[in-house]
Image (cartoon, rainbow, N blue to C red):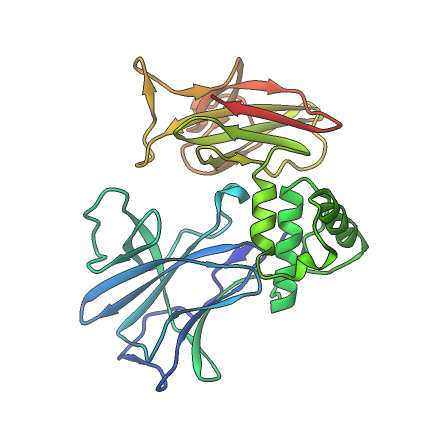
Length: 332
């Protein structure tokens, strides 16, 4: 259960006829994952598709996204997780490509994108389930967390990202999780009841984006930086990326264990995801250690013959982990 694979656990398949909800029913999105989810929905009626998002749903939470009876030929869902978690654990497969915006959006003709900042995303056909008078689309993991377990697992995961040892991430409030939580509350001068408040995930997210315990990147530029790290353990180096570090923000990647050495690499991208160039060269931060990467999210344990294996190579800079306090790489 500790490393259960996240997925969109929803009823899928091609639907026939019109989806009709009971009178006065609302459509909800429910999150039974250990990740904060940012979701978008698509509604198709008479051959025309519209999308709207992003709806943030915290672990263990349900949120109404459409009020009133739902009349549609097809309903679609797409989900992502905040960049603080690193590479998205959600599968990017589905049944239809529909347009989404970078921030909050409503798009009427979603079969194509026509404005800057919009891009196509893969949506999954869903059939909402009946919950009392409402209909719900559920996001879940193989661990099959209950509402309470999902919230506890979500707290565990962000505590780990923030540098506190709340492992294993299993949705069970044991002594180790309680100790990590107490230390977090004390370090941030919070009352013992703060963990039960509705805004506690905001507090955890804010803490996880500040330099502190462990290794972190901080982005002092005006560009988004895609970052990757390499961790050396027993003479072998594993690289992992990409982590999206927004301008003015810090991000602590999920470095597991106590690696002998760390390596860091970052490259700036514009709003369309293209490499930012200065004097004809990509704006990047690295060093002399050549390691393998690829264009999409990756975790690579073999670092030889990158090109021969269809991979790219990049120069990483060595970072010495600090046993006490934090080690921060700043992109300037």
